[in-house]
Length: 521
Image (cartoon, rainbow, N blue to C red):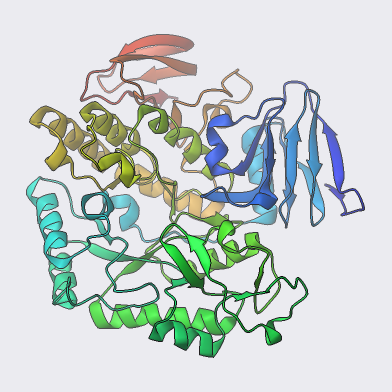
């Protein structure tokens, strides 16, 4: 183990080993990994709207870690580390990508031994966002839930998304849209669902909740242009610009803020019977240097503290995260558009999340979670919905939002049902692998380079391994066929045909088929 202390220049160049490739940094950069010469990323700039960590791992068994963010640049012959705020550690843990990851994770973010609520993995999830957007209401939520069951889909985790309250920071269902929220939750439970609700650390300004939070000094303050202003003397609450306007923001460096927020959520558990929470926002960009906190930390650390809060709730979901690898947190990929281009990012983003210590990954919503893709009478690509469902079927989690029974014809709906049925057959293996991840930190799904090192497979981004036993190759384009790359070994498809690797095959992929292959030992 080598380490490079912070100095006046805080810059170090590591000579690349022959053929060495690097992964890490930010999940949203997964489609660019392994990083090519000329690639650069400054983790001081934030979490990139998704999970991130101060970690790099290489195909030659090396890893880079720091407790604070840093910038890295891939050169032709070197990896340049700069702008680091704490010591950089360089380790060698064998000679493969898997060994590099296991070495880094065991030393710096060991597995907790716990996993999030198993229902997140055992059944598909259902989120009300795309169907209702900001019009969350009791009547339509119950209609959506009944439609899930009536369409033959198994009940699982049911997520009520943003705007079930009358203002941010309020933790009561608004009466004009939810005349009897407790009874609504009771009915959802009776149908077999566990219920989550969307929450964030924001508080709408100029209402009683804001005044309560201001009186208790549990929000961020504006430094009014004075970088050295101390928290005790800060007077003006900071109003943060985010995607829903301007709001005050809870300061999780203050233990009183953590207690206040936890009490509010527990009051919902007691009052309504809520089972868990989708903890949105928390991105580094919402903690600018112009704010004053109870304890002086950087924006990455504020994001990390938001992530730590969810450990109190086994039924959780996060999108923004910093340096919480090895923890029992469900991590959703950031919103994807309803395009094949974004569908093709699901696998590399999921794989990179696993390499950053986040194995319990939800690959966004089937067909895309960017609501703008579904408004204004935009056309729905039915094939894309099917291929998205198939891609998620053997990933750690599977989440619906746009209702397939509403937007698909009978042929496409049947294909989605087949994808769900396939997942249900694989849930014993998925649960076994999730348990392994909880105990050891090893990813549930793995890149071909991770399982078959040094076979020239490092750039494969449209296939993945489920554990070490199954090769999965979804169709991610508008075509009806694709090339499948087989690593060394013998492989058996769903019809018991055997193929020998290494090799490449052109594979016809009917609408209702997900190509997957069992490794024959």
